[in-house]
Length: 293
Image 1 (tube, rainbow, N blue to C red):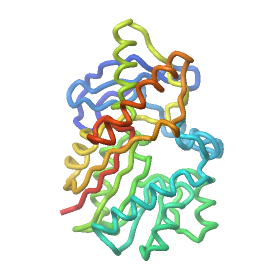
Image 2: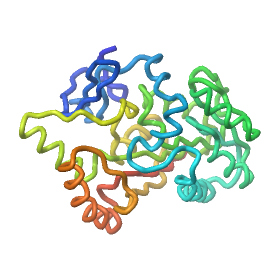
Image 3: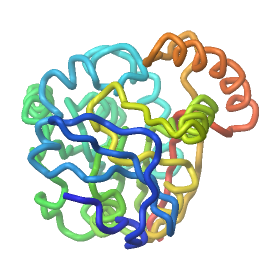
Image 4: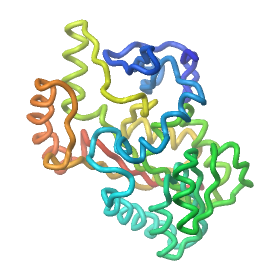
């Protein structure tokens, strides 16, 4: 399906960016909404195509979408999960928590250990099976299909999820509906488009009139910035409470591309790392907490 309207502003004009994915023999381009600046893909893959992306292979090899080594079963997100829970605790120390895109339930296990009631929503049957083996309640399917009652949850978490969804703003509006007044939503999301290497690379490709093929399937249907995420949350009705930018250290990042691209990324990532650590700008990840008034 061709991306006809922006999910956030309903604008219908998009500008092609100099990169694309190859998926089932077709090109899927990165595009920017000319009205609000939100970056997405066009044409948008259909529901069945998206479901096919998240099989066992994804959790075994591509869970970090090429940016960090490791599969879902390793401990690469353990420290981040602890930081996220600390953020939730500071804003709402008890209640019923829903994780959207809960995968195999590792985050929810930690949340349960800290006294929260927990439930997950996940589209992958393989991941749901893992979670249920841990004694977790998982709805296997899309969030909209779960039909939760209004105000059913005190806390909602989406970790590395929103960028995978074809309609992120619509999802946040649904989350607003099912969040209780005074409830808290937390987002953890990659912001790779804001990296110094991404800015330089896209500018060079555009200047030369060339296009780059992305090395992975179109897992990320959107490329967010902290500003665009805050706009989506505010537009959905939430009040942003905290924003924290971060960046993968140079000694842990996984570089992809040609030899020249890897050299450029490595050279730019060190100054980028120092800039992000000192100013909070140009990171490759952001965590945002917001509340429902």
